[in-house]
Image (cartoon, rainbow, N blue to C red; front, side):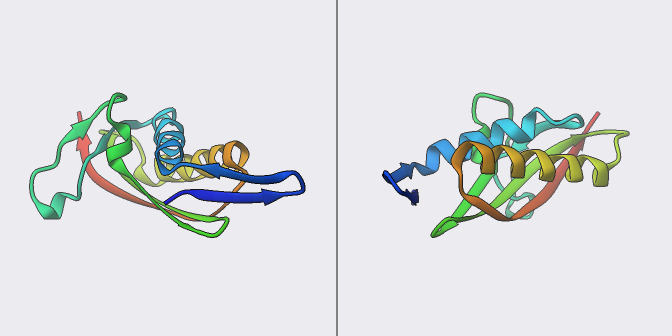
Length: 116
């Protein structure tokens, strides 16, 4: 699934992989996040991922020019989870909208664990 943005000069197509990487890098640059999680903890084994596989902790749904982002993260122990999530939401929304030109409708964050 790719995002298509139409303007006066033509159509811009952005692949899903690019949008996943933009969201993953934006999330990881926020203070308090340790890693991305490759799948939901309630489904069984959770694999913690660093920077090399950060797209596995991100899911994106595109509906015309509107993007929904799901992030699965591991946070640092002792940090306010609510503040980390607020910072991630603001950063990911800004980076996605400024880099892709598409509107971000919602960002859902699932905290899969805490690492000391």
